[in-house]
Length: 260
Length: 293
Image (cartoon, rainbow over all chains, first blue to last red):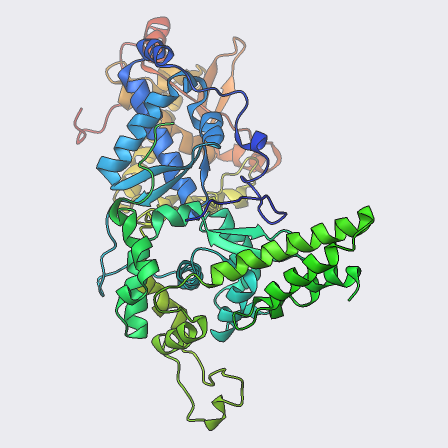
């Protein structure tokens, strides 16, 4: 993937503002010795309790699939235990791993932002009991086009493709409502997509990239497989995409969970 | 071609430039090169620089278009395949071509759900946390209808209350309480008749020195007598409560006099104190013979 240029646009709200907003200026990562000292002053039960609280915080915050900021965790949950923050996060990660089968991933090591993804592969077949979210279908289309087109597409291409699928960004859609908002705002805030302004364009145009969440959560190989089925072609016939899908060990995509 | 028109190229003919089928971009650059020889002023050079920037962008885009070395990926074909997958009900129509390639027909309601279901396997989304049994309804329960308790009752109201309250009592207990109340009234009357001049101390009347629970029961049953106006409580000169049955003749006065309510409470400690202070050795209200202690 080419080097990603992330320009802040008016559309990117929330956590992707200036860097100062994201980084809690009052929180600096405690050193190992500080953590040790902090642990000595607490009972195991206290640390367990705090760990459990952070786990619960994550689970609830993850419902909307918006990334979770370290600053918020420290401010709202960890609070006075901030001196043992790394230890708590270590245990939280382990809990998610062993108890829930989830992976805690720091998708942005600079701004310290986390998401939860599934460690387990999705089970295929009719056994799925959870109701499907049609938005995922839409997202899938967009991600597929971006991937098949080399990782970057101009917004017009996406809008035109969607129009062919009876989804018009200018009109209210039965399943999706305000399509433009869903695609350029919600999906972006969830870090599934990046919506970046193209310089020197008048009127302003944007291009779409895969977002940080998509990088770790979505399998390119599986997309290619589906492409093959749809087009009745061998996935390998798209040689460049095939190479990309299988170059990063797809089964353990992106960074492992970090403790920060 | 003027120098200024060179700068215009980028904005207006962008799409044109990008088509892989032509070499327009190369032509423009060659033209710009030629023009640059005539540049004398800074402003003209600035325009030239601007043109180069735009040309570079276009060049980059052209290059990215050449990405697919294997089979090219055509989004239009992709869309058509998707429509079929989602269950598009195509109309048998020759007019497809005339519509500029848009396929007629209508998508079923669950079209996007179908696609989402298939696409699920490509995602490793963490399942959303939710309570298995749902959550409780966060509104407070509607206020229960209050059991009527009269503060100042006229005789009529008193009669009305009686049936309501009795209904709430267990049927098997209802009669027992009534009986007990009557029995106690009997005791009270007989004591009073024995000696109408000596007032009967309320505490001496209700306290059973042998049993705290019996004492509480006595207080309970006596309260019915008070409520029904069959007995009355009054304070003597020492401010100690005494009880006396209401005479037949006094019933008239009932309507006019104001009725007061008070709450009696007793604890085992208080009960013992009363026994000591009043020197109660025997109970005035004999327990019913059938009762187990």
